[in-house]
Image (cartoon, rainbow, N blue to C red; front, side, top):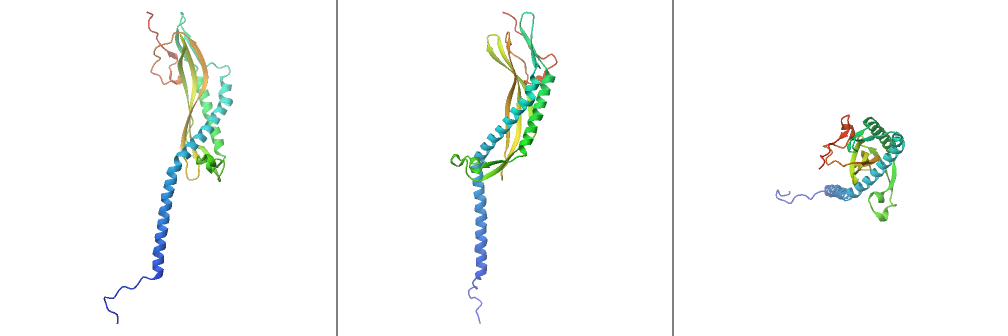
Length: 237
């Protein structure tokens, strides 16, 4: 007959093996989570820089095609601005063809969006070494399918700028400021990238006394009153 205060019975070998296996699996999963977090933190910078480059190249190509196919034909024989002088030859202001400028901006936005939609339908096979930013493995490693898809609307805003170009000479430019939001889709990572570019439409050398202050104006010709951009010159001394 066994005594009541005897030592406990040893654990069964099967139970001990299950405990060891559970502990091993837990440590393995925890290690994989930590390793994934470390790798993600280490690769986030190179992948985002690579994604920015890809997005800029694609957006620049879409803008170039839009300028070639839509903007350039619209500019033929269409004056977008006209300087105004008084009887003494002083520059009094500039009028803008806001209707033509708005039409060109709208057509450019639609065409750029169409180009991005067409590009999103295709996958770009890119070597893994190039995505990771490793120069010595730039053309090596398995190829990863990458897509660049639009992430929001394409914003095209007309701008007018003025820059001194000499004595009583001002370089007046009309340009389109294009803002494109895209998402670069890579397995397990999909950074959003914003690309801003400027497309010159018109460069015009305006001769006349340069005004000191233009006005508190955003630079968008469409926000001007019907009379265009006007300013008052200081009195002669």
